Amino acid sequence: MSAVGDVTFILSGTGLVLDVAVSQAGLANYGFAGLIGEAWIDTVTIESRPKIQEMLSDAAVAESAPRWRQVTHPSASGDVPISYLTMAVGDGDRLIAVGRDMREAAAMQQRLLQTQQSLERDYIRLRQIETRYRLLFDMSSEPVLIADAATRRIREANPAAHRLLDAAEGALVGKALATIVDQRDRDDFIAYLGASEATDDLVPATLRLAKARGEARISARLFRQARSPLMLVRVAMADRGTSDHPYDAALGAVVDRMPDAFVLVDRELSVLAANTAFVELAEMPSLERVTGQNLGNWLGRPGIDLDLILSQLREHGWVRNVPTILRGLTGGEEEVELAGVVAPMGDSECYGFTIRAVARRLDVVASVPRDTPRSVEQLTELVGRMPLKDIVRESTDLIERLCIEAALAYTSDNRASAAEILGVSRQSLYSKLHRHRLGNLVGGHD
Image 1 (tube, rainbow, N blue to C red):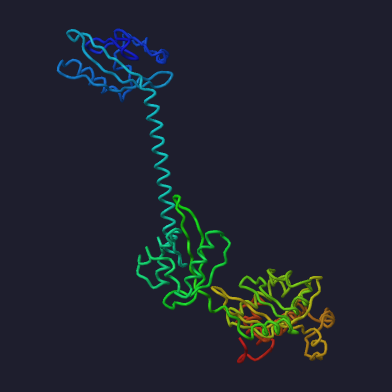
Image 2: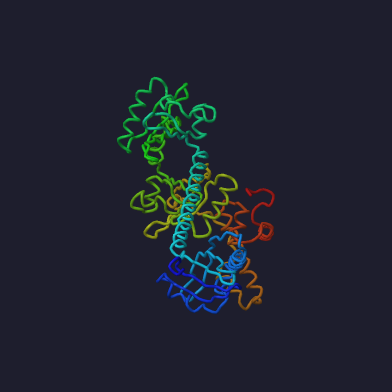
């Protein structure tokens, strides 16, 4: 019997191991020889014990045909899968269990399972890629067609292509690719398709679409899928709005030659364009050094002017005659007057500013005398004549009035902006104007 199987057990009728024969050399190190005297059911794992009970019960019934059952023996060197055939000997007081080593078969099954799992993962990944491709293909706003390079017939077309060519869903599949262009341009289109098979650097061809749908730029590219050559054809309507206005060039030349500086910025105040006068005023070497920089690098007092100008622009859409300063590259400051406007730019907006240097004009204009309150010398002469608290109160009033007058002059008498600069509420500013008898409380530009 030892020659029949890789491992053979002689068992009692109750399943006690009486003798063991191991003919497979690879199983000698798994401790089968030490199982004599133990119950056979105790030599296997918990999952295999029901199989042992079935084999012992079937062997006790003479009419029952024996069958192979695989169980697992635990050991210090690892689990050993063995397939057993159990039969009764004599009057049933002895049983023989002939076992075959299933380690190679188990290893092969494990490799097969791993291969199946790997194939399943690849299949899932392939389905995900195909789903993303299909979603992108269907949702693309650009008309795209996929055609067979050999037959030049359309295999797939996205909804955008059907809409552009005024075809029902799926109606383009199977049609000749040349039918999408006008009959007069089909020879040119066929020649373009032939050239696209030889190179990938072709410039899109402008051709007339069929049924007088207008001109379109068509590009084609060859690729292979499953060893079959296919063509990816993209169609885009020719942009009719790109023709320049007859006066655009003259307008650009006029802006560049203006004596006043002009600058165009985006919503974040990054310079988009500027004329020569602005480059010179900013003391920059070239227009390229200005483009992309923030306008705040040159214009306004930090944290004051630009914030006020932007708030006025966003509220009213324009500003005019705003006095500020412009700092040059070398650190010099120039007094300027600014006007600006908001204009739409795509999904956002842009700001255009004209900047005029006013330093020379201010020097010529005579200063207007004004009734200034007590000077510092006059205040110091009051020491000893008036209490200190009265002197402090009068000096505070002097400073407050000077600051209010400066803010009103800076904002061109815009009281709301003056209150924002001074950091007080509008009601508080009105109260101070009334107390210092400055301006008219009824009118105003606010």
